[in-house]
Image (cartoon, rainbow, N blue to C red):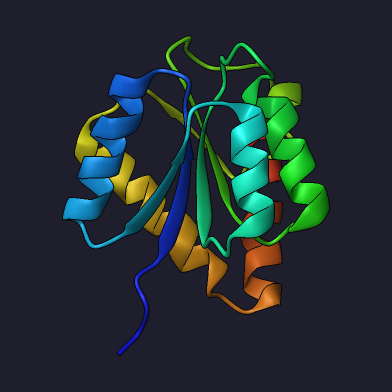
Length: 140
C-alpha cells in the first residue's frame, strides 16, 4: 500500500493552520504543522515531506524567506505560498511553485495541492516544460 502524501503546513495563525490540517487530513493527506518559519524549517530538515503549504505573513520570517531556504536544501519539494493580501510581487514568488489566496474555496485549495503533487511525480523534462510555459505565460 502506498504511503499517504505528507504535507508540512506552516502558519502563525492557529485557526487557519488547524482548518487546513483538518481539510487535508479529510482528503487523505498526512499533515505536519508548524506555527512559524523557524519551527517549519526545523521540521522540513528533520522530516520527509512531499509538499509545503506556507503562509507569507509571519512574525519571525516571511514565507518568501522560508521558501528560499527550503529550496536551497530540497529544490524538488513543491511549495505553495498562501496570503490573505492578494497577489504578491513576482520577486516574492521566486522560490514557490504556486500562490494561493487564503480567500480561495476549499476545492480550489485542494486542487492546487493535487496539482503540485501530480507535477512532482512527472519526469524531469515535463516538469521543466511546465515551468517554462508558466514563466513565459506571465512574462508578457
